[in-house]
Amino acid sequence: QVPSPRWSLSMRGTFAVAGVLLSSVSGETKNLVEKATELGYTTLVNALGKHAVGVPLDGADKYTLFAPSNEAFTELVTTLDAEDLDKVLDRDDLQYILQNHVMSGEKKAADLAPGSYPTVLGSSIVVSEQGGKTMIGEAEVGAEVAAANGMIHPVNKVLLPLSLQQALPSETSLSIFVEALEKAGGILPRLGFHKEGFTFSVLAPDDDAFNAYFTQQNINKQAFLDMPNLEYVLLHHVFSHPIFPDHDKIRTWVGVEMPVVHDATSGMTVGGAQVATTVPAGNGMIYIAGGVLSPPELKNLVETATGAALTTFVQAVETAGLKATLEGTDMYTVFAPNNDAFTAAVTDLKEASLDALLARNDMQEILKFHVLTGRWMSNLLTWTTQPTLQGADVSLDLAEGKLSGALLVDGDVWATNGVVHTLDKVILPDSCAAAVAAHSDLSILAEALTKASLLSPFEWTNGGKLHTIFAPTDAAFQAYLQDTGIDKQALLDSADLPEILQYHVVSGKVMSSDVTNGPVATLNQTTLNLAKSGAEVTVNGVDVTTADVVCGNGVVHLVGSVLSPETVEADTASGAFGFSVALAAGLVLQQSAW
Image (cartoon, rainbow, N blue to C red; front, side):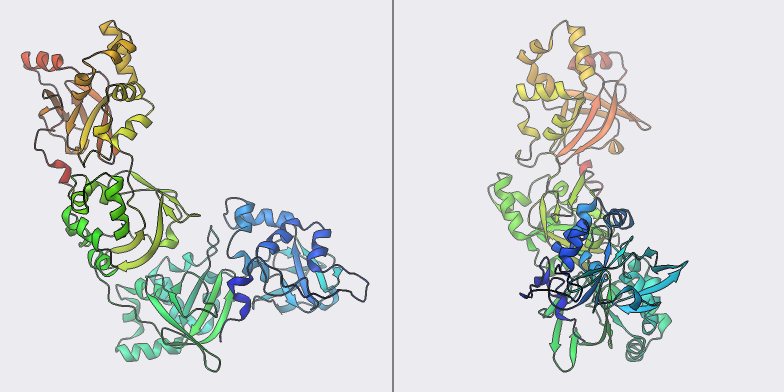
């Protein structure tokens, strides 16, 4: 069966206008929507204005409307784990929830004997009598109110239909499919009412279809349930929205587009599987089908990105030395910029060419900022921030569909070792310049770097250089000013300021975990004595108070004193090198993790 035209997206947010004068035997001239407005059901009316229920509640045909109170909608915010009432009213699945409150025909209280009644959603509501009260589930039905084109029955709760998570197990012909969903783990809960109100649909092979599939594949049910790629096969039957009559294809949750054919006689097929029955739910549709869909063979992340025409990304991965990582067995989620994004980055990062961009020393850091551990399908992206392999967090704006400012233009393409999503922009974590400027304990250092015109070496436009900054805290600078007997302005005006600051910076990126003892050259051509004992890092004998403040093109370690070459000479003369971080010239530890 083909879903009825009530599912048409074009109906969202409109009322069907009948263009006739309404009246009733009782003399009531207000239609259901107008009467609900008069009765103070402001939230319901607002919701109906945003989401059409597929029938003309302001037309001449008769309908019965179960009207949740304003308080019931407020309660729904908590029930659906939504952010606020506005978010509830903007949910995509609210259209289907509202349809569960409308029945065709006018039904008075006397007509609502205990029993099951179909709604315009296609689901059913069950009326019961409890203690002399008429109930629908846990909702109490109030006194009826007549309208010109039907009857309003107040209810003190929103009547939630079954979600896909609940509806699938209730279909007796889907026992094998449901058993597989439960065996795969984690799929059924994803099909419940989503916090953001996402809608889904499921092509559910019935038991006969699975038994035929087992015969064709020469396997039994247990062998199917034990397949290592069972989740992949099952998610190939799940889509991110219902199938509408004008759809000729639909994308599965594993990123494969399936053909959809609508036939007036035989009905609908998806990927060649004949749909026998449609079962509506509160957040989408179940299409019970006579065939099992076989997804394409999986490839690793690099091969998958290549197949998705992300050729510049693949070239960058190979150049930066990440190919082996993304071809391995560890699970990753890759947000791969498309080719146009890399072309734009050439200009943004002030490089001469695409080859120059890809050859940058910090390209590995940039690419690692596009990779998360684990497989994060798009419907699982409910967090606001998440750490990347680079160390810095990416941010997610789910409403805008953006990751750290870049638009998610494609996604959910499965690989053996993860999933690939596509971005329209190369995303960058904070540069070391931005990290220093944003840190609350480094305001004097930030001011000094600006005064000395030394921020540019730590910006993204520095040609791809990586740096490690040993950053004196504000307290360290205050102590330094007191010891030297000068004020901050005198320090900022000093001709020696650039040399002092450069003494705190070495080339390359080394996290505290990579530290070994030894001297290291600074940017002003002198040396620091750096080392580690256990987890404690010191420089010139001074404690690193906060290690590993990660930035995109390096790392910042906070130190408790302003460093100077004299402290090195004193330590050397006494034979006490103290503790130090190994950041010697030519060090390549920044690549050791990959």
